[in-house]
Image (cartoon, rainbow, N blue to C red):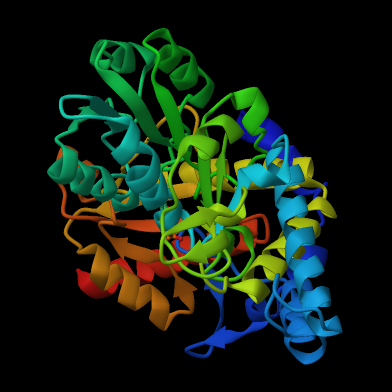
Length: 416
Ligand code: PMP
C-alpha cells in the first residue's frame, strides 16, 4: 500500500479506544510512558484475556476430559470451545485438525518427530527458507541426524525475499517437505505461501507453514492456502504464553504416530498394548495448558470484535510511516526491504551496536529487541551479527513512532 493511502486509514481506526483495552500499554518505564515495539517477540494482552484467565481460575478450575463433576465438565467444555474458536479462526474443516501445543516450537517439533520421522527416509529432502527462525531449522537438523534426511535452504534475495524462482530451483523429485515461515520475524518479509504450496505440489511435497508472525497481522485460511500443517503461538496473538496450535490435515494426522505418550491420549492401556485416542487427543498427552487454551480463545474473540481490516491498514500505515522516517536517518540501514512486509523494522546504525541502542532506548521507555532474533543464518547472510528491531501491533501509534525516532537520535548522540 502507498504510504499516502495507508496514512488515510490511520484516522479511521480508533487506536486510542483499542489501547484502553491493554492495561500494560499505559504503564511507565524509567519515568517515561512505555512505547512497546517488541510485538514480534510477544504481544500485550487485552483485559478480556486477563479477565478470562482470572475467571477460569477463580470459578471453573478443574482437570479436563476425565471428571464427571461439574467443574471438570465446565473446564472441559471451555477448553473444547476454545478449540472450536481456533478452528474457525484458521478456517479448518474440523476440530479434530486442531492440536493444542505449547507453541509454534512444539508444533514444528511434533511434525518433525511424528510425521517426518515416520514418513521420510534417508536422502529425502526438506526445504526451508534462509530467513527461518531457529524453531524451523533445528528440528529438521535433529531429524537429519536421526534418519538421514537432507536439509536444503532456499536463499533470500538482497531484499530478504524468497522468490518463486529460487524455490523452484531448489525443488527436486526428492523434496518431501517444504517448511516455511509465513512472515519472517527478523526481516518482516511475507513469504508467498500460496505459491510455495503450488510449487511444492508439483513435486508431491507436503507443506508446513510457521505462522508465528502471521496470525496477529492478517487473517489466515488454511483451506484456501491448502497447506498441510500450520503452526502458531498464542502469545504472539494477544493470548497467553505456553499455548499454541498445530493445524494438520486429518488424513495426515490420522497416519501419524503420537508425539508423546501418557494420560489423555489413549482409549485403553494394558501391558500387552495400548490403543490410542482419536484425534485430536492422540497428540495431547498429559494435562494441557487448560487456562492457556481458554485464554487463547478469548484473544481470538477479542480480535473478532475488532475492525480487523482497519487494524491491518493501521499497521501497514505504521510500517510505511516508520520506514519513511528511517530512510531519513543518516547512517541507518534497513535490513529486510521486501515488497510485501508486515510490521517489522529491522535496522542498523553506523557506528553503534544494536544492544547499546536497545539499552539507551529502554532508558527512554522504548522497548525494542536487539540481536539475532533466533535467526542466526539470515544474519550471516547479510554479514551482520544482529539488528535492532522495532515491531508493531495495531495498538501502536504514529506519535509513538515519532517519539521512537527522537529517542533513537538521542541514543545515537550519546554513543557518538
Ligand atoms: N517462528 C517464528 C517466525 C517466530 O517468530 C517464533 C517466535 N519468535 C517462533 C517460530 C517460535 O515461537 P515460540 O517461541 O512461541 O514457540
